[in-house]
Amino acid sequence: MYKSIVMNRVCRVEGHGGIVVDIKDGKVADVKMNIFEGPRFLESLVVGKTYDQVAPILMRICAICSATHTVASLMAVENAFGIEVTRQTRLLRDLLVQGGNIESHALHLYCLVIPDLMHHPSAVTLAADYPREVKMGLELKKLGNNIQETIGGRAIHPVNAVVGGFGKISSEEQLWDLREQLEEGLEQSLATFQLVSSMDIPDLCVSSNIYAALSNGESGYSLFGDKIILSTGETNQINTYKDLCREMVVPHSHAKHSRFNNNPFMVGALARIALNGKKLSGQARNTYDRLDIDWFSGNPFHNNIAQAIELIYSIEKAIEIIDELLTMGLKREKPVEITTGPGAGTGAVEAPRGTLYHSYRFDESGRLAEADVITPTAQNLANIEKDLRVCVESSINESKESISSKLEMIVRAYDPCISCAVHLVEINLK
Amino acid sequence: MTCAFIKEAAKKSYKDIMVVGVGNRLLGDEGIGLYIIDNLSQMPMPTNVNIIDCGCDLLSLMSYLNKPQKIIIIDAVCGGGKPGEIYRFDYSKLPTTMHETQSGHQMKTIFILDLLKSVYPVLADSEITLIGVEPKTLELSDNLSQDVKERIADVTKLVVEEISTQSSFSQVG
Image (tube, rainbow over all chains, first blue to last red; front, side):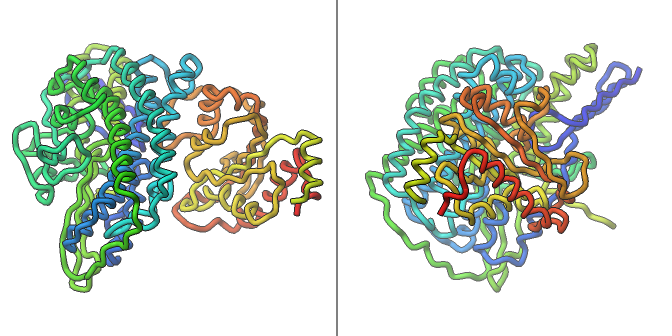
């Protein structure tokens, strides 16, 4: 007997992706996560550009993750030219990235995940029954946008963060205003955690996972770090990220797949909480401690609880950063001057969906000769396929509809951003 | 703005009006709503009119939903007509849509309005008009097609007429 399940469009994920499952004689013959969103060739677009033109172009890889793309890009350029930025710049960039994390997690949880867990086809029908909760989610998303707009100058595709420093900086009044919004947001994030952690978390595909995330050593939980740590116990410097992300072109996808020692691995909120959760502090740490979850069990649905914890973390961290900035006093600083020339550098930031790498090489004239961007979704695709296979194997006798519904939920748990992933394609015609 | 106009507006209890442009300037005619907003922003407007460029994020509308008002949304609409054809819809008269397929990147205008209406009751008391323009191309480009560009003046005129039902342009200035 031969059965094939073809899902041309996975609902409620960012971008266009589908799943194809082939079952032959009662066994899973093949499971593929197809990415058929068009390739975008953004890495080629920046070749030949000057250092200051790179971030404004590459941040366009994604709207929702534009803050992290911007910061990773700036860090790669600065790393290539050996530039150190000031404490104030580092804090403002961190705040910008936390804003992106808040926006993205709130949007994913309330518009894409909670409807699944509460058996609603969309956020609109969920809002009809739970208007207060959905409003809370939208307010949190707005908070994330407000942070990015205040610090970055625009809610999407920030303009204030520049190579070597910051352009226009916010006023202290604006920071006080943000702080007030964050205090309210903290209550909403705690309520979100209560909501998500009280739901039955599915276990459709539990299998061993390798996790990877950035680490900043013994400092607290962070979305930045100079090392990549793995659940296998290995540690890499970020400039050796290619050892982790062994990329390969697969025929069914416009996005490349990443493997570590030929094994799929997972990045994102779950990987961060599993590897760095003990570094959390404040109310985020309290919620983490209250849970009786084995983060290493390999259940991708724990990613959603990890996102709820990170919502609390990002809001607390944003308040902490604002307090430090207000204590220091905001100063107009001239961005560090750059002497261009040949160089190579890598920047890495924990984006909402996992570790994001930007790596560039500049030629003798200081123009960009080569760019490599590896997004979290591209890293997760092989792991998603692994989990889809595990799910199909355990539900092989169920109806197509039942299996399809489960597979869609698994993909959504990862919060994949397919639009981000597809710029990675390489087509070699011989 | 003259005092006389403000007094007259108060006397007539004009509703506040929000004119919202939605779209992406990098996808050809998808950006038409924003070009109209550019045009309107250059014109003197009565005090009860707020012109907003929402870009690709119509959800940011929630920042302005603090009172019932007239809302005019301008966007590209694939209605099957000729490129440049102009549509006008009353949101309240649109058939109910079952929303199933959504992503955070590609939320449709009607989905967002339905979502916001569910959680911001003030939106249910607002009068929402959608003005659409049939695109010729949604391919990567930072220009409008000639067919759509030629309709900018007509769309702007239609929006001004919509605004005029709730304010007095003759008193502006």
